[in-house]
Image 1 (cartoon, rainbow, N blue to C red):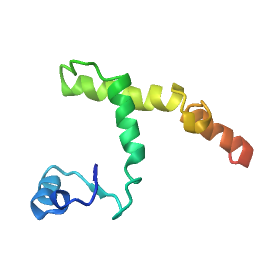
Image 2: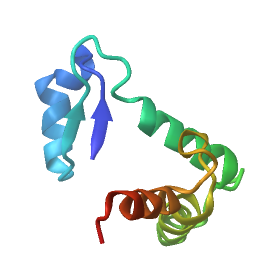
Image 3: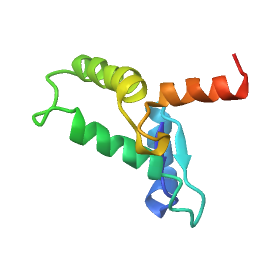
Image 4: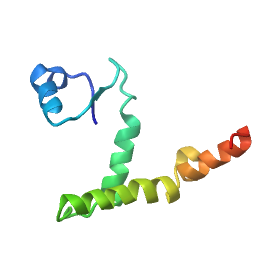
Length: 103
């Protein structure tokens, strides 16, 4: 997945063909809506500042395993989020399920 704004460089045929060649799906924010990308930018800022080693990874496999662990383990299961009142996303969803009666 490649998310971007609707800049001409991202909408060009050459760029879209390159994404297609690498089997990437393109996602663009709506015209004039700068907030579309804000959640992803926040996630990547946290990932880079809290988790990724300063010198990077030795291999793609090591990066995939570590980043996957961060996203699925720490970021979703443990990390407190101010938007959720200091709860992790999983804990906030569980609380919502209990309050709404969804099992």
